[in-house]
Amino acid sequence: MENDTLKEPRLKSSKYFKYKCSDEILGLHEFFVKEPASKWCLETFVRKLIEEEADLDFEQSKELFLANLAQIENQRNVDNPIRLFCSDYTDWLKTWKGQAVSNACCEFFQESKRLGTQLQQKRKHNEIAEEYIFENAKYVAFNNTISQRPQRETQTPAPQSPQSLMPTKPNKEIVKHEKVKQYIESIQIVCASSINTSKLEELVGKDLANKIFSYRKLVPSIWTKSLEKYFTNALDKTGKEFKLAIQEEIEGEEENRFRIYNLVDASPTLSRSIKDRKFTIYHIAPLFMFYESTFGTLEFDWIEASGIVKGIRIGDYREIWQMEISSSPSTPTTRHTVSDTKKSIHTDILLNLVGILSSHLDLDVKIAKEIKVFSTQVIANRLTLYALSMQEDGIFFTYELASAELPFDFHSRSRYMVVFRLMAIFHDEIVQQKAIMDKIDRILIPYEGKCVCDVLKIPVNL
Image (cartoon, rainbow, N blue to C red; front, side, top):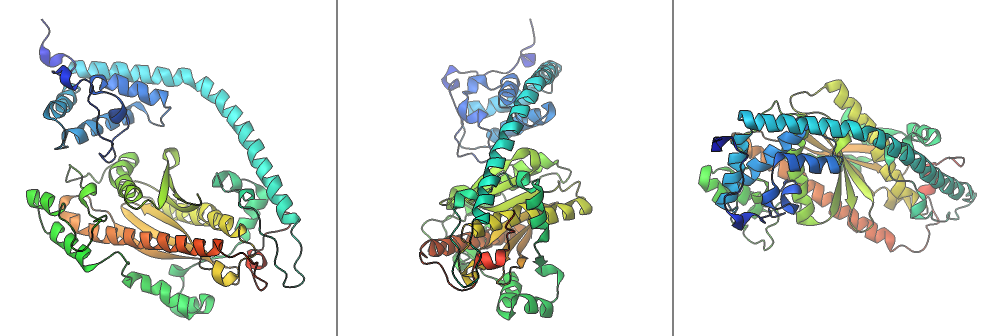
């Protein structure tokens, strides 16, 4: 009779066959939310990823499966039989029988990928053709709108371009258009971190220069004494006392939205030799999933293959923020990350701002210069938040708002104070931009003085 320890684990009670995890568990793959526990096995999980055409190889798929089992096992509010099953299955995969099943799943995975290559290539050809036709149509419409705009010999305002005519997605496809690329390259962008105080004041004025340099001392609007007291109290604790402290109410705040309760990982230490995808899933994703579900100001679009995350403003559905994860903490490359930062600001982020400004060509430049878009660069374990805006003379200006390092172990938890401050500044900026756009939307009479179309300098033949 075969040893029971070599059999693939199954739930011992039929009572839990239909059990599904709660979608409130942060970072959990939807497989464990939608599929009943009776179907939780490596083979079914791999089949699901193949159907979804996930951009993962087999080892990454297996690693993701085991990481989710470990996460479920460490959830104290999950019933013991489910947690026990997750533990048993993880141990079983280490046995020779489990390795045999894993190898069989690997062969099936690779064969499925191979057979699907031709079909994917055919689909890709069709998508490229459709994308070309779609983008070309948008360019024609945009060209017609710009070329038909009357030349301003006097101070008569130009008609406002319809928002739908400004191509916005996908940005990287737009840059491939030669004329747009030339236009983007012709735009001057000044980075505050690369110039001294006097030069900065000369370029943007003393008030804005002082505001930029004051960001390091800025206290976000939601950063109250009660919130800081809550953080300090929680981060001073360890073990069970820490888990209790993070669940405490924040004095004087009914909603208690900025608590760290939802960000505490079951595992207190994360290896610094972690790979890109795992670093993103464990460290980066929970922070922004927490922000999206807590404040409801942005909707995040994760583009897994490219390591880019886009932030879409709820309301006008404008892309106003982008994050690029350049590399994992174990393999940062200075040359690569510097190139990524420049590329992101000079293409995608800049086009986001140009897209918004092009929808308000008859807006007073003094108001338009308050419009910002944002980017976050992740280099190793450091997050840096930037803002980009246009000045009254048409020069685009970028500057750092905040920077923070993510901790890797429980002993470094105090660093979360800086991380939360960065997110608080980020939240303040998003809320302020929503208020500015609401104000702009209420302006009905075109401005007769110097407005956006006078300084944006979009070529007539673009």
